[in-house]
Image (cartoon, rainbow, N blue to C red):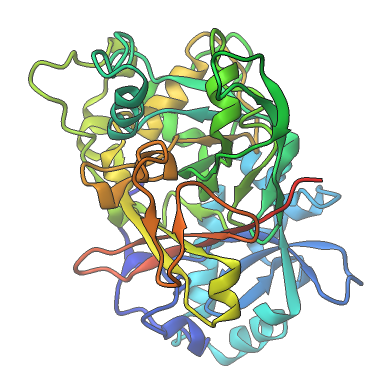
Length: 437
């Protein structure tokens, strides 16, 4: 676990004025990594760090600067992967250097050096920060699992393995897209009428899932598990994830092997990777289990993980329909949840994933599964919010939603707040639904 240090000082201010806005997601205490391209498209994909309303073009800084050793031997758009493969604290060396360079007390020469490579957000487009080779999605919110189980198995909502095993499945890395990418409504087999054979039609029950994602930094060799004590040494940072889901397709196909075409048509991620060091002030104890719940098995148990394995990240979901945009109605908040309510920690997810010797690799994306809380307002998907479509959501435009309709845009936001520390954010994760072909 990373310790709180001088880079988390809430009194730190930057000479980049937009970073001092109390509402920004990207103050000097954050500095997430990203992969961007100048709108002119002349320089190709670049590795950057977000600060306020600007991006620092790391590759344009003079190569003699001490933190650029990892760029010298890298090529192509995935230079962030090269940084992730290095020692676990390498991203922090970059972040610490930049905190000093962006501090309002930095010397004039340093300011001038960095100012030359500061690019306004309006002049760039963002892309996937890593070359994602594999994607695994977990099911780690007990409130989400209980709600969904109650709909389909009211007498037995949680299966017997849930409190022993971090449940997950392998998703599709090739259909992961960055925030702002439109999502086409998928086709699939639908058997809503149990008396008739299935039909192949566009999904009628398209949904979102509000999730936290995290990227693998250093991988592990095949056949070599990751100890729970070392799990976070293999993490680079976190992002937001929308695991789009076609619920009608899912209901028909998921037995006996679980999610498949209902999930693999699209997954949206936010473009900024907030490092584990930046999140240090927002660590919490692991989820407090009921006294009657089993304790994690030994390979998933660690005192440090128990005390600090949780994360206090607020997650919000908004919707803006076609009609709302036409009438200039602001996006409507559907839910607010928090990652403190995850039954399994990110360290336990990582450890369990590699416990059989599975070789995780730099840039692999791992997601938490839908993050939901106890209250209805904290449910992280429409399946839960509308209770499988039986309790539609009322929108300020006079419309109702049971599931997503064409033209709907889903906007996800994430941020951390704690007294005595600067608010930091994860940015946005957006996607608009297009009609099926």
